[in-house]
Length: 87
Image 1: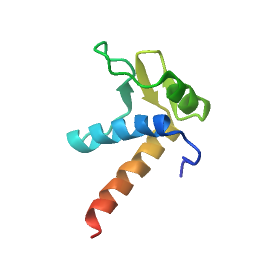
Image 2: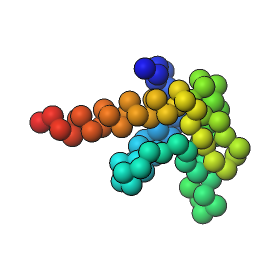
Image 3: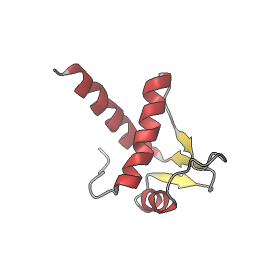
């Protein structure tokens, strides 16, 4: 399992954004837009942090999850699903 300990809230927000899209679309997400051109963007510091931990690669426009990042995202999505099933 990927170690998410110590990640900043901004870095966790990248995973939260991807988790939202995966849960709402029902499709596995392997990357998200870093800058959409209309004002929404992931923090550059968060992207650098995730890249430094080996979770993502980015070209400045798109954030692509590495294998470790995909594993972490699936762990987060599973946690959200489980929390919704336990009263």
